Image 1 (cartoon, rainbow, N blue to C red):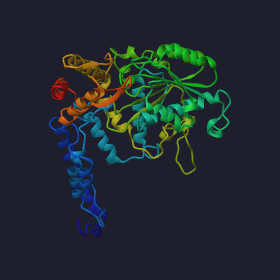
Image 2 (tube, rainbow, N blue to C red):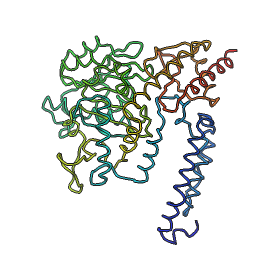
Image 3 (cartoon, rainbow, N blue to C red):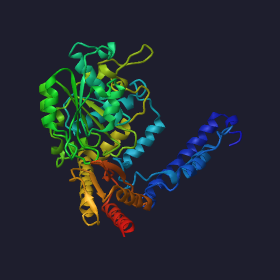
Length: 473
């Protein structure tokens, strides 16, 4: 590479176009082909990875092909095979082929999807994919939407709209006047809410003193009777309900909660990071009955739709407060105006932003309505199969009735549970995450990947049988 840049940037561009991208594509394809054979967890520790990836910043240019090849080789032992069928940690999906390919194109096209003027194709793809999703979830016609990095950002967007709406109804313009001196807004949340709700509220200026916490049952479902009592006091209020509790997969009674919030004039927000996707399944959508009556919804595409990270979506039944809460204007921008094409900065907290809608569009088009339903249903069936298989694993205690794709279980005391989980992860056969349930250590399996097969489930059960034998023999 010595002297490459002295030959001109056109020569550099030819090297990149002709060699580097083709080599990167081959490395990527080899990685995907290795998923069934490689250990699911990492094979290098922190210090080894620092040594492999570290070193001083080069003084001069390095051949791009060398950079890519050495990066891939150095990172490989520190990669988690999360796109594979035996990764069951957290709630992480894989990548559908069409979505992965579209994501590559998104990177190469390198569009700034903030304004229609910056990328008309990105704007229209977002418009089409957003409407497809709204229809798939059976949300109210005319609902607005925003493509954001993840459910955290989706909560932020939805709750900003909620803040605008409930304060505007009592005569307070929060975008103009801020929160200092504003009427108090009660935020009603479940004791088993996801932590991203709290974080979004904190970023919006609502401290923990603003939270009214409603008890939840053992499965993580909000106590509706207790919610009724909490809403009696009146005043501006936002209620955060849940479609898919992160440990158990259980659903709040969204119909009953919608009745109460409607009567109280409160805004109802639904955290449906992964559970909202049951609305795409005729067999499972009853679990989220009443969801369509909410005012806003947050979900992830990088979970059950199996779109590469990062990809979340916010929906709002009331476009006016949604737009008022997050839009911005400036004389140096080329904006379409309310009646023009979609300017994405009118709906998202982001300004310069990746064209996230292309992979979502590709995933939805490749699966179709029926394919999305089958993907969700197949993952749930795998979870039920795994839970049934645990009945034959000595010492295993099931902690939830499988509702959708989450299986919660433990072995004896906390130390035994952690040892068995560590044994399975260290074996490389599967990767699951630990959690807390009822104040005790537990293991959570989440099936969220299109690649997961019957064989993957059986291999994981076998790994647990071996772990039990090794740790309790």
